[in-house]
Image 1 (cartoon, rainbow, N blue to C red):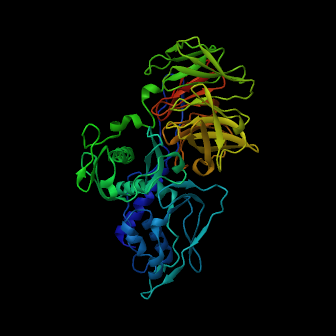
Image 2: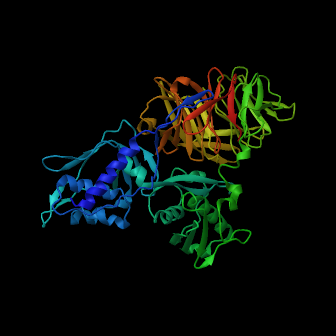
Image 3: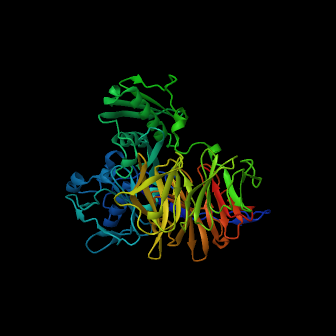
Length: 577
């Protein structure tokens, strides 16, 4: 092995060790603080170790190790990785077909006949970059690389995987997570479609190409049908100030002004998901597209009305304390609560709409759902005589979702005081006890914790709307074991961003708080000591996570390591919107 290659492999090993080490923290000197060191798996550390072609006379094991390394770093057509293959394997290998992500800690092993990698696959990317976790109960596949010697007596791989095969560590450092955004059917909001792209200068162009190809099969029924058939991207470049120049061709020049506007918004929200991009400039056949004010430089705030998370002002913290609804008077304060003038008799679990002029509450030990207008004595009873009503939730369009522990058949949705029909499409929410429920900020998805056969399951369902009805379908289970290593039961759920969930999870020693991407690709342990025994979490985009104990004490997360006591004797805590 050459000296340069040895240094590069040593650097890669050192980076693995350094990233595996936990951080240190100082102990707070005042206040009721819970100390906690988070454990996280991120994406794209920005560290690149260039792959090298096979060394002359390399052993079978070194050839496989070099091939695995070459697959983990993007090159055009993966030219370096192909040098490790036989001529026949090189002709048939398709790295663009997808990615298998395997667990760390399982290096390839040399047998008498070949080299084999036997490691549990934790997730897969399809050809479009959509991630899906692989259940922890799946048997570890064995990849026999089929080493053979060529005419020059050099070992080469005759049996590569169908696409890319990368370790979990290589995935987190070699791929970047970016959501594509598509307009909803009404054109009122853009909805994210999480994807992963190999890190590098080519990634923004790959994201534009994927956007033009349309949404994933899972999201497609909930978004507007694509109008980009025949539109191609010829080049994407990023200037030093962070503006991405997007050159389109094909049918782009024939799009209507409304179609151009929609695509501009989708491109702006998509490309600014890259750290290095803050704005876009789009041309079609050399002609610049402009917004309604005639500007060619486009940012997401150009289309702020389409934001999937809305504004920070729409998300205030509310509590139920002493049988009253209260809210934080000043968003910058910690515990300055004020009463909300709303007529609700002994509220239990509450929800507050985005406009903060309406509060819904369960009462009478979860047998009634009532709605009160802020500043008014008016009270509307929406459900009564039904037991097991759990915390309601408002969608961005004003819908009030009222789940019940009994299961999906007792799920009710109201809009404008009218009860909508709730339908269940193919592969929908299972018949099981519902323990927690949260509508996504964009209103297109819902996260649900169900319990069936004694097991707690977290899943996502897609929301499709029609006149007077909503349909839940596309049920997808989020398997926590592969990404957290903790099989504990999920207790509560909320949306920390438009694509990330915060989960309250019960373990052997208490409860923990996790931040998990909706596709199960990444997770971070953000909770305090499990011994605190949290019973509920409240979370909203761009707001701090807070959690309530069964005794009513509420803690807020103040930075990476600290959770501080905010207030006591609280029965429920939620964010509006």
